[in-house]
Every structure is written in structure tokens, then in C-alpha cells.
View 1 (cartoon, rainbow, N blue to C red):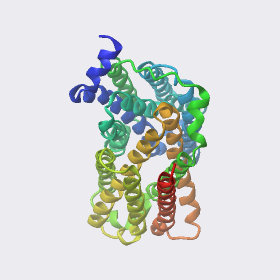
View 2 (cartoon, helix red, strand yellow):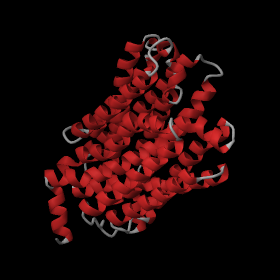
View 3 (tube, rainbow, N blue to C red):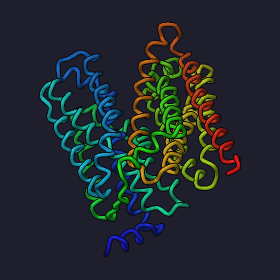
Amino acid sequence: MTQTEDARTAARPSGLVKSLLPLAVATFAVGTDAFVIAGLLPAIAADLEVGTAAAGQLVTVFALTLAIAAPVLSWLLSSLDRRRALQLALAVFVVGNIATALSPSYSIMMTSRVLTALGAATITALASSAAVAIAPEERRGRAMALVIGGLTLSTALGMPLGNLIGSVDWRLTLWAVVGLGVLATLGIWASLPRISLPAVSLTARLAPLRQTKVLTILAATALVMAGHYTVYTYIGAITADATSGSFPHALTLILFAWGLGVLSGNFLAGSWVDKISGEKVAVAALSGGAVMLAISPLTVDHLAIVVVWALVWGATDGMASVVQQHRLVMIAPASAPLLFGLNSSAIYVGVAMGGILGGIAQEWLAIALLGVPAALMALLATLLTVIQARTTQDQEELPA
């Protein structure tokens, strides 16, 4: 098949799903690798003979490396076709995880986490831009939802499964992630067509960064993620009253409900943005998140209520992830790799901000009340989106 014929085949509904599934596996591997380490910290600290706080820096250095590297590497790899760029990124990701699994010391493991993050930094952005390139315009939202669904599914299944495997030996979890990376690489090689983006100058690619709309979307993403992760980072302590005295895996049930909600919100947003305004879906997702965070102190005493709350809360988080990416790509499709890289940075900056701000807020607030400042950040993200949407509408209504 020629490249054109490959692309046409991939654009058919059955061919589209076949091409997108390896991309979802790749993002699932990245999400599992990014978040599962936190649950393995006690075992890692004991094995490497360091304190838990020092082991926690493995999470910090991974997130910071990814946040810094994502837009830079997305731009550097933008001239390669998406299939080759993804295979290169996955190769680095797999090697980094092999090095992590084999690390005999803390310093070597720290270096290996940096290497892993360099590979992970562009996988989600590359997979998203590949999905946009092969999907018809009327199916772009659903295509991105499927790809990002791999990332969100990792929170529902990857984390608990990874921790379950890690309870035997934490290194086995990393080998499982290696297997996922290899599986994704083979799937991309077998089913993803070559996707060469149009030649665009550096000036043209960077042009969207001069648009207030792009910067507002990125700022809103960072703020809403900071709000969500102010609570999520400390969810175990926040729900302690609901889980104490319950069955042993009560917290796992709460996290599973949250992850299932994220996955549901992911696909809902993907379907909605193909039919209605992205700004309307964004406002619904961000304001919904603000409401769910604000009422969190009222839910934390009873397990059944917490589970339902976590399901709905997770849906607002999943919706936000998809709709913000969709809004970016609709602004400048030619700059999709760079914009997706910047969006990944905004997400991980928000995750880091949430952990830091949540820790600081506990100096003044009871931990069960962390949802209040978290809701304020989500509300600010909503206000930014509303103001930006109205400004855009006013500009469009001006006479030519």
C-alpha cells in the first residue's frame, strides 16, 4: 500500500480503531509508569536503603523532566513521521524502564527515571497528533478520547494492578510496563500508517503561542489539574474516616471509582466536542470539577457516598483532559505536536502544583477541607475559559 492508501484504510471506522488501539496501549503504559511509582515508594525506599522522602523525589524528577521536555522534544520530533517518532520515543521509554527495574542504587535509579521521562514526554502528544491526522474531522474528538483513554484507564486499572504486582516485588511492576511498551511498539509498527505532517516553518509552528486563546487554555489546564490533584494526592488521608473499619480494600474501591469516572468523562467529552462547542464542554467540565471539589468535605465520612462522589468527580477530570486538547488542535492543526506537548507540560505542572499546594494548605486547614482551595483553582480555570470564550465571540461578531 502507498502512504495515501494506508491513510485511507486507517480512516475507515474499523481501520481507525485498529490503528488507534496501539496508541491507547502506549498512553496506558505511560500513565501506569507515571503514577504507579508513588504506591511503590515504601518498597523502593527499603530496597535502595533510602528514606521515603528521598524515594519520593523519583516521582518529582520524573514529573519535572516530563513537563520541561515535552514541548521541546515535540518540536524536535515534529519533522519525523508520527510512526517513526513514536517508535523512537517508546524505545527510549522501554530502555529507561529496563534500567529502572535493574537499578542497584538510588543514584542509578534517579538517572533511569530521567531517561524514562524523556521517552514518555512525547508519547501522549505524538499519539494524539497521530489520532488527529488519521481521523476524519467529524471523529477527531472520539479518536483523541480513545487515545487519551489509555492514559486515564491507567488510573483505574494500571495503578491498582501495578501495586498488586509490586506487592510481590516492585521491580516486577516495571517489567510489566516494559512489556506494555514493547506491545505498543509492535502494534504501531503493524497497524499505524506513515503519517507525515505538512512542512511548516518554525515561525509558523510557534505562531499559536502568540495567541491569548492558546495561553488561556494552557493556564486553565494547569489550574484545574492543580485543583484536582490537590485532593487526589492526599485522597487516602482525606477519606480515612470513610475507609477505617471498612473492608481492607476500601481505598482501592474509591480509586477504582475515580478512575472509572475519568474514563467515562473522557469518552463523553470526546463524543460531545464532535457535536457542540468545545468552549461549552470545557465550561461544563471545569465548573463541574469545581462543584465536586467544593462538596468533597461533605462526602468523606461514608464509604458509599465517597464512592459515588469519586465516580462523578473523576468524570469531570476526564472531560477536562479531552476537551482542552481538542480546543488546542482546532486552533492550529499544523502545530498540534507542539501544542500537545505544551498541554502535557500544563497537566504535569498542575499535578506538581496540586501536591505542593495541598501540602502547604494543610498548615492552615484540616486535610478533609482541601477540596475548598482546590475548588477555587478549578473555579478560576472556569472563569478564564468563560472570559476567553466571550472575548472570542465578541471578536467574531465585529464587522470585517
